[in-house]
Image (cartoon, rainbow, N blue to C red; front, side):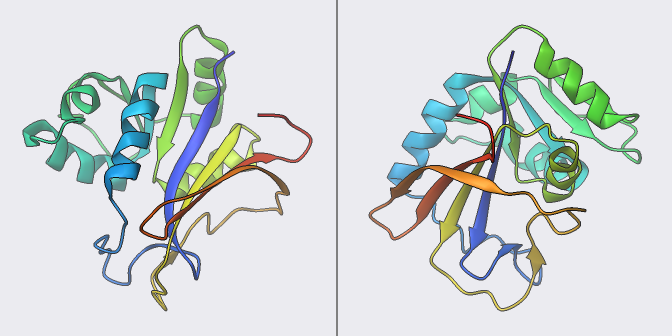
Length: 183
């Protein structure tokens, strides 16, 4: 069975998006890019919400970043009832019954699956018990306002810390699993 993990940058005060949707506060250093390289090799699919998908679809096809070829060739699955046309290569739109579609994907063969950003999608999948691991990249910044991550989660979800990594730039990566599960 494939594992589904969430990867999300978050400020110390609990925001994943600045008040004007700015992301210039992310710590994207050599250590983070080494993580990205390893992570991209461990997955064979990315799940995205519509907003994150649209940002990625505008960026990655023309990017010269080292990870761009992998981002462009990996299968992408975008959860949306409003997106009619997927313009980014290897993208499938999931418009109906997203939790069941994701549960079926997890049962299939292959490497792990990643949710990158996409807090609304992550809240939905967390509420259905479909996320096996939470990877929060805590950035040493206080934003004061913006969008809170996993806002809308209907119930409390207790987590068990599996691993912590501190980067030279002061970012802290915390890996959690839902209580009662092992990594």
